[in-house]
Amino acid sequence: MDFKDQIRQLGDRVGKLRENIHTEEATKNAFIMPFLQALGYDVFNPLEVVPEYVTDVGTKKGEKIDYAILKENTPIILVECKHHKQNLDLHDGQLLRYFHVSKAKFGILTNGIVYRFYTDLQQPNKMDERAFLEFSIDSIKDSHIEELKKFHKSYFDIETIVETASELMYMNELRSIASREMSEPSDDFTRHFARLVHQGPVSQKVVDKFRGYVKRTFSGIINDVLNERLQLAMAKQDAVNDAMVHDPGKAIEEKPETPKIFTSPEELEGFVIVKTLLAGIVDPKRVSYRDGQTYFSILLDDNNRKPIARLWFNSSKKYVGTFDEMKNEQRHEVSSTDDIHVHVEHFRRIVQFYESVRASDRTSASDATSDGIQVPAPEIP
Image: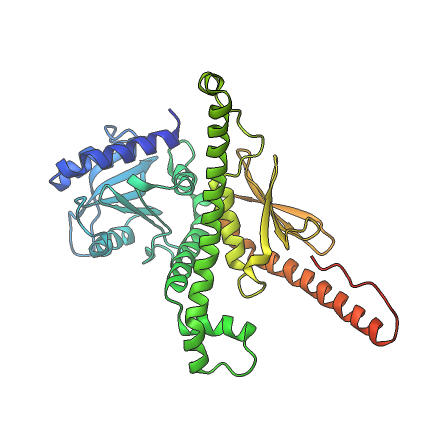
């Protein structure tokens, strides 16, 4: 069983047992110790995992944290545990105090369901107020599992984790802000988009008017993608149904062939992200996609000559391809769709280039006509 399967299995276990766990100690035994074991640590070996680890805090002696994970007799991870029904927001200060007096580089605050990972990005030896990684074990995403895997005993490397921790923390904040702005656009967010399309000063009255426009625009983008996914699923089901009507015996005996081109949910999620990042730069309806056997293309005006990005998600390593004005592609390795946000400037720059060419073609045609030269209208996809 690989690491992903172990974590998924633990998530299922938590979902089944949570209503029968009534104490903090039971939470540790049923949920948290198996989690540490899934990370490759021997919870019964005091050279690896020390329960009730003593961390003297100031004048207080004998203060203890629930678990310390050791490497070469030095704590590398502190784990503070709570009952699975407790709100973790009430307890992060306690872990902060322990972290400050320890040599550990990482702290985990958990109630056996929600896990929050902390380090000291802002100030050395002082735990950040914000977690750089957070997930619920019973609904964990693949991208979170990939980050969690870095804490496995076999792969644990402090420098590697710290390198990505800062990026994760800020991207989590940006994701939260984006989600909030899409559901309830703030004045500043609305004003930014209003300025891109509104002629004249953007007063508070204009902002209030555009707030609904912005909200409905983002809702429309999301609905468009969901409808595309639904239509794709329905088309596949229709193909199966047709096979059963024309040759029921064969349809039952033989499994339908796997299509050579399969558009994955991860590719569609990437498309939504790119489309959303370009809102305000270009009409979202002009951003489309075409899937292929090796890569997933995101295009402007459904035109292969206007590539915005390529998602190379069909192998173990995933890449996002970006383009310059000469159509040269550069691939960037990503661990999840969240990493697509990092390349927003590439997407915007190439779209703005296509738009400038489009405007130049129109101007040239207009000038030629005004000079009495009859030229065919340029093809504008």
